[in-house]
Length: 199
Image 1 (tube, rainbow, N blue to C red):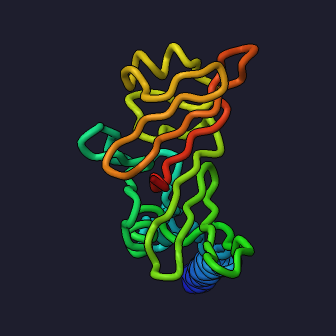
Image 2: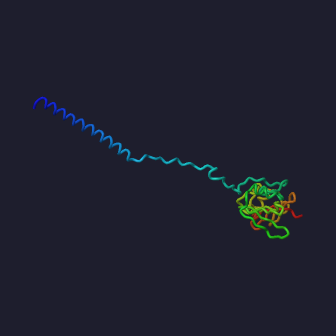
Image 3: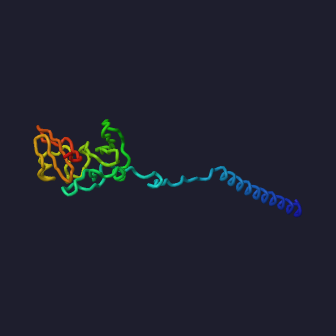
């Protein structure tokens, strides 16, 4: 083989090697790109946010834990209400009642506003006529006295009553009566009511 032919053969061999290397590199690179593009982008879930009170709406007031004015002989109140208070004060303190009904008395109709643990009687002039406690779960503002307390508890917390029998304790103040009905066998207070003195 002449020198010229050897040089030509080497040149062709080098050219083939270069072409194979170049095409192999581009093939490898394009394969990586295609493989990479086949993978879906990673998505992260947005962080969960706790709803604020404005988003969920205002909480319903707990009528059994409303702070009320306490009873005293100078100002006899029950659930913070006195006789002849306006109905608007009742609604302002405790919101709308759970139920309403009318006591059937043609000469003196009384609308009763019923709440979870107490009720309020309203006359035809929209004034409070009575307040009645219906559950021991509520503090009616009698210095700690509740339904299921004893008559001894009542005297300790409210003082000596004007009427004191085995059936009833009564306190007369400012043309009102605070009446506690008592079980004569157990001395447990079974009902608590504030109403106008009929005298």
